[in-house]
Length: 142
Image (cartoon, one colour):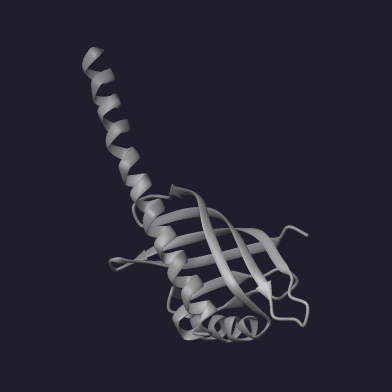
C-alpha cells in the first residue's frame, strides 16, 4: 500500500513539468502565429496548421485545409492587426494531441480602430516532432 502511494506521488510529480512544458511550447507557437499574422504573413500562419486542419470562425462557414485556411487569414489580416494569443490552459489528450484554451485580442484596421477580444479552443496535433493546429474555434466577447 505504501509503495503504491509513493509510486503515485512520483508519477504526479513527474507529469506536472511535462504539462507545464507543453503550455510553454504552445504559447511559443501562439507567439509565432501572432508574429506572422501581424506581419501579414498568411502563409506563415497557415504553416502552423496540419494539412487537413479545420477552422470554425464566428459568423462564417467552416474552412478545411491549409490552403483555404491561408486564404482566410489573408482576408482577416486586411481587417485586423496587433493580434495577441494567450494560452490559459493546456490539457494533454494522449501523447500526440493537446487541448488548449486561451484568449485573443486584435485591433481593427478601421478609421476608428477598436479592440476585439475573445476566447478560443484549439486541438493541437503532433506531426513528426512539431505541434500543429488541427482544429481551431473561437468567438468574440461582444
